[in-house]
Structures are given as structure tokens and as C-alpha cells.
Image (cartoon, rainbow, N blue to C red; front, top):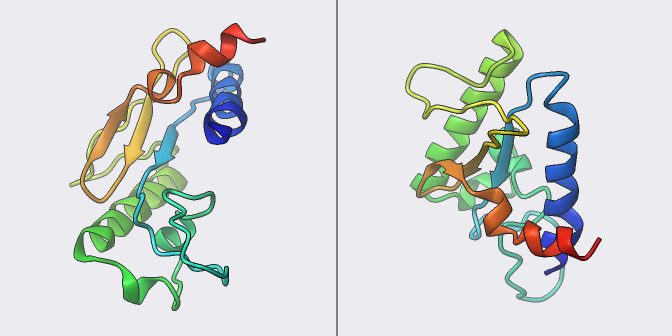
Amino acid sequence: MVTDRMWARGTQAQHDALAPHVPVYAYEFADRDAPMFLPLPGGFAFGAFHAGDVPYLFEDEAAEPRFTPAQRRLSAAMTGYWAAFARTGAPRGAGLPGWQPHHVDRPYTQSLTPQRIGPVDYRREHRLAFWDGLS
């Protein structure tokens, strides 16, 4: 609930505000089994936590040894996307699943998981119509 209200809603609003002016490539890191790399106590299951994508993009000696083969493939795809974006301004490259830009009238968010990389209905998944109705 907090994720939807605080993070997803604000992220969607930011994408919608920027998209008329610059290309926006929205994504959602959704690996619910991402290794926790922060020194937090206890065994709480954090799911796809904030900053959980960092070890997938930058070498991290605490997290990388715990990656599954599917998580290693996701990491390779993500670094491929980021490198392509830095090189060309679009996260597209050989062997990478397609990624469309986000538009207000045609929203697009790429979901990044070890099992699947592709579009997600971000507004529906995070119940943004409900939250918008409370404003």
C-alpha cells in the first residue's frame, strides 16, 4: 500500500510530466527475490525493494555471488539497456527485449524480472486510479 501511494503514484506523475518534453523510458524493477545487500537485521522478506536494482547495474561483491542464473541474465540485460541508453539515448540493442518510450496518452513501463522483461500495466498493477480518486 505504501509503495503504491508514495512511490508508484509519484513516479507515474513524474513520467507523465516529463514525457511531453523529453523521451521517457519508464521501468519497474520487480525482482521480489533480489538479494538484500544492505546490513539490515532480521529475516524480513523485502521483496523488490528500493535500490534493489543497484547490484544488477554495478558490481557488488556482497550481492552478485547470491544471484541465480536468471538474475545474472537480468543483470546483463539491464546493463545492456543502460549502456545503449548512454550511447544512443534509447534503451535498445541486439538481443534485448523491446522497450517503448512512455507517452501520457500511451503509457509504457518496462517490467524487469528474472522471469520476464516486458511491458506492465503500471497504473492497474499499482491501483493508481484508486489513489487518484482520493486526491
